[in-house]
Amino acid sequence: MVSAHGRAIVVGLALAGLLACARAAPPKPAPPPKPPPAAGAQGKSAVIVDLEEKAKAENAEAAFELGRRYERGQDVAADPALSESWYLRAADLGHAQAQALLVERFLRKSVFGTDAPGDFAKVVRWVRDAGERGNPYLQQLLAKQYARGGEVGRDYTEAAKWFRKAAEKGAASAQFNLAVMYLHGLGVGANPQEAARWYRRAADQGDVRAQFSLGMLYAYGLGVPNDPVEAHRWIGIAVAQDAGFHAEAAFALLEEVAAKLTPAQIAAAQRAARDWKPRKE
Image (cartoon, rainbow, N blue to C red; front, side, top):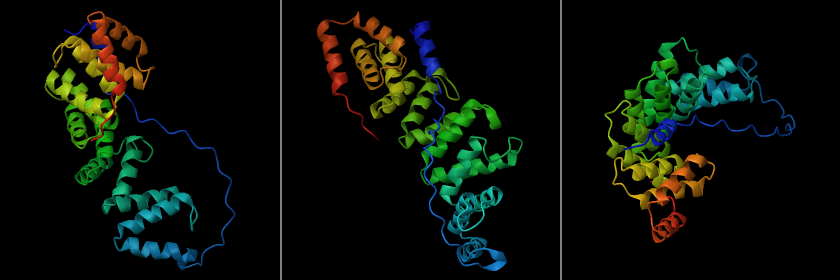
């Protein structure tokens, strides 16, 4: 039986971690100005005119390139609205990179308004299309949106469905989140054995949260046999990878588990933790 303290730790790990925003790189010196390209129709450069003609003929790559150029001000004056419209055109034509870009911006609330439900339906379609081509990144973004609420409202069943799609493609973060949902019965029937299975897959790949959680399952015999040696090993692996991850709780649990082991068993668990190497799927 999981102690109240132990369960609180696992719950605290549930659906953890927004995508971290990368720190902005220091500004680079501006490159020397380039000579303007030859002008085409309506004063546009020949490059832009050519791309627009191709894009209007349903060339998805040309539409995406126009989106980039209008965003960056390359061969044309920067125009965020036109950039967005060309990205949307490329995405509607099935351009995977444009779809990925717009899905991420939508989920970060940086392109579409929150009062435009029709746009979200389009995002779901893009994610589904991308998923068929094997894009677990977008599947996880959508799963997190359903899990947290926001524009779509909270729907754990949909969250579990999309986490599963990404997890089955080997995404460790999705495997961890799916395990949490099985452990707590969020969108799926509570199933500690399934939780342990998905924690193990994520832990084997190096997900520290999954390693710590798997150690807890072994410590309390939840979904797996009660095994203090395995508990000590997995918690030790998590601590070795990230000593600051839930450090107080991790070391407290290590002490609790170690009290049930002989010195030889502790040494064996520590040796196994040192020898552990991640195995990517």
